[in-house]
Amino acid sequence: MRKISLRSGLSTSGSIEGDRLAGIRPTNSNTRVSAAKLETVTPVQRVNPGSPDNIGLNSERLRDVMVDRLVRQGVTDERVLGAMKRVYRHAFVDEALASRAYDDAALPIGHSQTISQPWVVARMLSALCEQSVPKRVLEVGTGCGYQAAVMAGIFPEVYSIERVRALYDMARQTLRALGYQKVKLSFGDGMAGWPTAAPFGGIVVAAAGIEIPQNLIQQLEIGGRLIAPEGASTQKLVLIERTGPQSWTRTEMEPVRFVPLKSGVQS
Ligand code: SAH
Image (cartoon, rainbow, N blue to C red; front, side, top):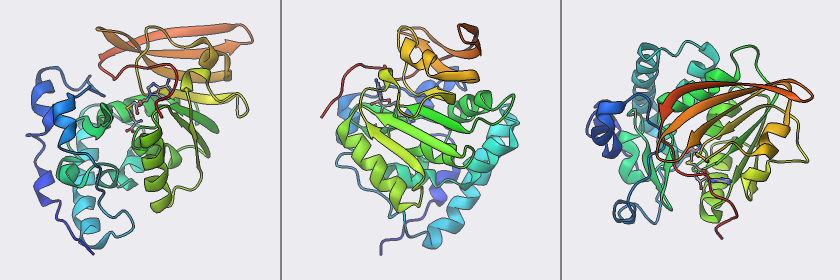
């Protein structure tokens, strides 16, 4: 069994995205990375998620550092902080990047996609449970599965859709290995939502579209909340709340940068 030390991850600087984005943090999130960079991390090799070994001890300290940083950045929701404290973020990234897994940075996960920056995960999930904790929630853009795992620690029912087959397979494998059986995964275009499981009390979109897909807005239950990045070169987080059968409110939040929301699937 291979053991790795995550002690080097105590440094919060020097990450691939961290340096480049330092000037505009903490509002950045899923930054697109170049194909050249991604080549260095494919095929994806994981830290064996089923073997905490000494990683468990070291990574617990790293998660403490990450959560302390989130608190300093203004995250107050104890449910979100507690869930992020528990999820092994290092198990969702390539082994070569594991030491940076707890930095406040988006990291490449292959296929031109990134794992969301911890601050943005915390911000979006806090917004979903500001009034009350929704029972059933949907994530569009599973990616490596990290955010879905955090969601599983907060919400009773979690659904997540991914359009890139290889990422869907990888997320499923990681989530199952770590014991997140209750997360329901689907391979498909999340812009259509998940009609057979709707309505949702919360929807979180992990990729930015020019506008928020109507299907998703329609699949919110009354009182439900959706949070999504919106825009192309300039993006911001948008919070939609369904206030009645045909009424919604819209609140614009921080500027962010996410990978694009795309239609169709990539097999
Ligand atoms: N939540 C992820 C973030 C992944 S990045 C995490 O915790 O790591 C955003 C993801 O959205 C990418 O994997 C991308 O393939 C996916 N995506 C983009 N458009 C999509 C769509 N229409 N349906 C489903 N997934 C989509």
